[in-house]
Figure: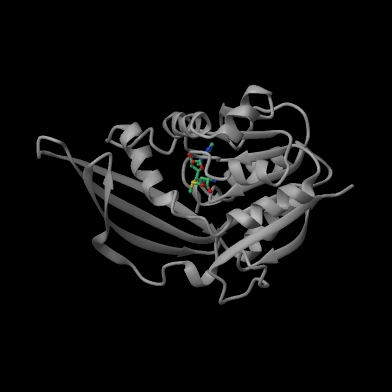
Amino acid sequence: MSDPPRGPDIFADQPGDPDLLAAIYDLEHNEITDDLAFYRELARHADGPVLDLGCGSGRLLRALLDGGARRVVGVDGSTALLRRAQGRIEADDVLSDAARSGGLRLIAGDVRRPPVRGLFALALAVGVLPHLAGPEEALRMVAATASRLEAGGLLVIDDIGPAGLPWRDLPMSMDWERTLDGRRVVRRSGLTRHERPEGLWVDYATLTDAVRPDGTIARLPATFRLWYPSEDVLRHLLVEGGLVTETSYGSYDLEPFGRESERRIVIARRAA
Ligand SMILES: C[S@@+](CC[C@H](N)C(=O)[O-])C[C@H]1O[C@@H](n2cnc3c(N)ncnc32)[C@H](O)[C@@H]1O
């Protein structure tokens, strides 16, 4: 099974305001910090330009620069998320100095054909693969990225491991309640699973209520079809894309990957 090809903007077909969806996305994603030291260290060892595929609102940019990356390029298909990444750059002296001196750049584009020039020592796809519509789409990203890697350069694919994936359908229920610019935001979500030979597909539906200052509620429904490739499919994708898998970790503490892993972090190298 493969879905029809999708556009690169995950918010394009959602009924709600993309900027509000992006702000709500950040409410959740900004809390993820357990991977920052891992990516800082990868950048430290990379010794060359870094490509952050699906950089979103730029959550990883500071860690990459702190690791010593002298050139970081972030590519994302969502202009609403890139606007937030730009805001993050303007609010952070290290990021804005790097942007001013040409060491940090954001580009609106599709990870399946990243619109970048030059070669990279390190490319990251953190949480991106599940948004692609199956093996063909994923192979486009892997092959296009491999062609933009220096000999010996690394591609890191990071998504959810077996122990973190849902094992049953979940009805719509409340996830959290937070505050956004003084407005109360309530998030509900539910999901339906579909197991297929190429991996697990998850239809993930969210319903977010944002209370306006006048007390009325903006209700934002959104749906995402996510794909978590099987081990075999991911292995083949990397081989077909021209990469050699070097290591797989099951956590940011470098535990080996296995059935109990919450994360699946695959590091693949372009052959010299
Ligand atoms: C779960 S988010 C991860 C963001 C970021 N890597 C992080 O770890 O914070 C997935 C990101 O991939 C981007 N994305 C998904 N499909 C894309 C595509 N075909 N082209 C460009 N960006 C894409 C989304 O816009 C989103 O920013």
